[in-house]
Image (cartoon, rainbow, N blue to C red; front, side, top):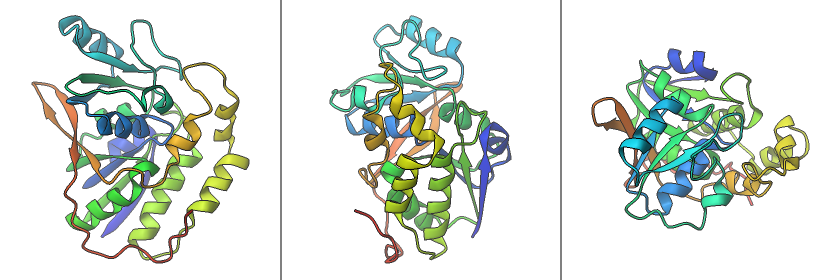
Length: 244
């Protein structure tokens, strides 16, 4: 298995094979929480105008996302897991657009298959890759607004790669680094409602969910994220993983 780590939109465009689009803070953490709360359809889009058009054509749709970390006019929610963790989305359709994560999905045009990536479902991602056993895996780190590399995305890519290669990983060290040393920790000081500090723990809730989210065609030109639950654990979990 060839495992490559790429960065930002350019990296998404290079991605081949089974592709994992990574956005830990916060798009694909949010997506898992929304999916776990019963959403009917979760539609990631890269273009704000598409999001607004879908809302205009379907007033019952829920708009969720951000630009520059800030919830946009007319949106129901931003891109914060703490704002939606307790909400019931049963039977609802959510349109999700963000500065980084959703941009990766729409730009990974040469990928054979796309799933999303965050620490909240890291083991499910690893198990899914093992089950599929592809010749090529692309781990794409979307970073800050898809323009600047972000520690958390690269750390998740390395975590997944190391486990697949049988190398030791230490999540406690990753969390300590993110909290105390990474510049990503700067968002803990942001008091804007679009990015509350509580998001940190929710985005780093390792293996909270046991499913992956796979991008599948939806309608004529859209994709939706489908929850894949039945993952065969073909290889035992790496005993070297250390976590709380």
